[in-house]
Amino acid sequence: MSFSSLGLSEQLVRATTDQGYDTPSPIQAQAIPAVLSGKDVMAAAQTGTGKTAGFTLPLLQRLAEKPRTGKGPRALILAPTRELAAQVHDSVNLYSKYIPTKAAVVFGGVKINPQMMKLRKGLDVLVATPGRLMDLYQQNAVRFDEVEILVLDEADRMLDMGFIRDIRKILALLPAKRQNLLFSATFSNEIRTLAQGLLDNPVQVEVAARNTAAESIKQSVYPVDQSQKTALLSKLVRDNGWEQVLVFTRTKHGANRLTQKLERDGITAAAIHGNKSQGARTRALAEFKQGDIRVLVATDIAARGLDIKQLPQVVNFELPNVPEDYVHRIGRTGRAGESGHALSLVSADEGKMLAGIEKLIKKQLPRKAMEGFEPTNNLPLKPKAKADPSKARGRNGNGGGNGRPGGKPRSAGARPGGRSGGRSQNGGGQRGRSAARQSG
Ligand code: AMP
Image 1 (cartoon, rainbow, N blue to C red):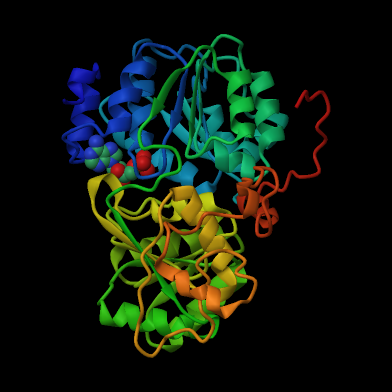
Image 2 (image 1 turned 90 degrees about the vertical axis):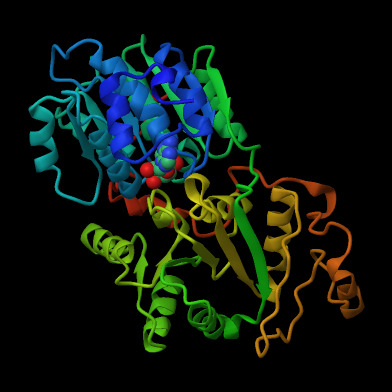
């Protein structure tokens, strides 16, 4: 199969060839013809599947079929974070290099005036984070009456970050007749409700089974005491000669602390999270990509939207509170057909989180041991082993991780900890805006 056999124009195919893509990824093979046909699309796709090109290429082709008459935008792409928005914008520019389509990106945390100027000049594709887009709308800097195509990218993360109000406001302002594309890594009930109200008889696209991690990713767990994690990480980086490793922590503070400790250990590292300025984040990412920094330490939300090609190694320094985030995190490795390795340093107090993850991905992760780093507190295999050490014997027993008693999934709205800070990462700061007239 080739990009041209999917119905893409010669100019767009040439742009993919320039990127070194020879075959469409599975999501592209399904999404491109669906979007070209003008239908609404609901796609379950993680980062790393090639989803961005999956919606961008056909969207560009549809726009190129007739020229813009007004100032636009004619396609609106909403993304949860600045990083993702910037990255999608880069993709739009790459893929549209042989067609006259114009694109711009707007997000919070930077000056609004230059964005207003860009909008005034007219454009076809606008990539935006929801908060900043509403600010621009309220300042009459953007109109939506020419929008023909709407894309919600990483819709699950937008809801996690509290953007539902802004999204609903934006939806209410768009022309009723338009094409809607919704991409999400996971499908909670909240996402399904949003999709029901938004999509008209959508083509459903799904590549990997829901919530299963890509097969190409080797995953393992090192049980280790919390106090030994930094030393173990340093050792792993050195022993394995890792030159580019993305490390996840649960908190911004934790990311900073770990970065400092690694630096003290002589390992170049930088932290990327919402308290860092946009400039600092971009710089850290660039240095990491160039190989000047060996370890990039990130929080979940900041990592969302980082596009790093062929990242061989991801480490969970701490497990995420939400099992789905584990799937997102390890999706950073083994991208677009490459194989990757995801390794988790897990202390006894994280046993429950590990069980939740293993339940979600429906497999038990192999445990590894490093001499000198054996934990004093064993990792319980079954959650809530009720502090009975004799129970720890079944460690490699029956398929493991069978979740909490009663097997109740955690509700999508009840995410513990670490989430509320996410919103500010977008720099929009429109929390207090009234949701008047809003039906949702
Ligand atoms: P995405 O899932 O959109 O974040 O894309 C993941 C990565 O895969 C990006 O670095 C893309 O440049 C790359 N990519 C997208 N489509 C293809 C393809 N058909 N062949 C090879 N790489 C691709």
